Length: 113
Figure 1: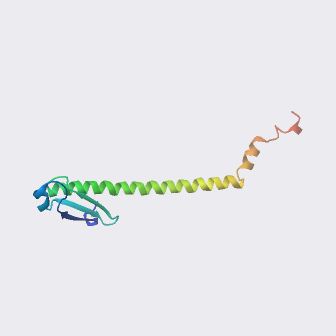
Figure 2 (figure 1 turned 30 degrees about the vertical axis):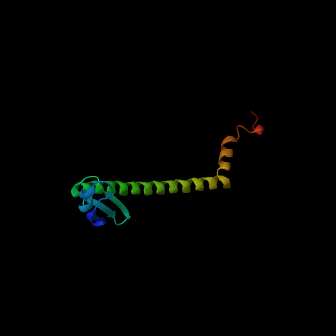
């Protein structure tokens, strides 16, 4: 992800840890500006480690959203073509072709065979 599309803030952590977690800004909150995805990491006491963890998680979430969007578009496309095929079948466009294949001069009762 490009750095220009990410905004991050160092925050005080929450949860157990007492004075150490209450007075240091080691937790990182990252926002991917184009999508609005927000990730927070306070897994370690190190701000730089939390930054790396948050960045990795954010990249995974953005990639997951891209895959889901692509999958949704493909599913929508398949649904469209399936609907078109069903409509053609209802109109009877293919029924005549199948009948022509099975009925021919060899199978007709007037051909003398």
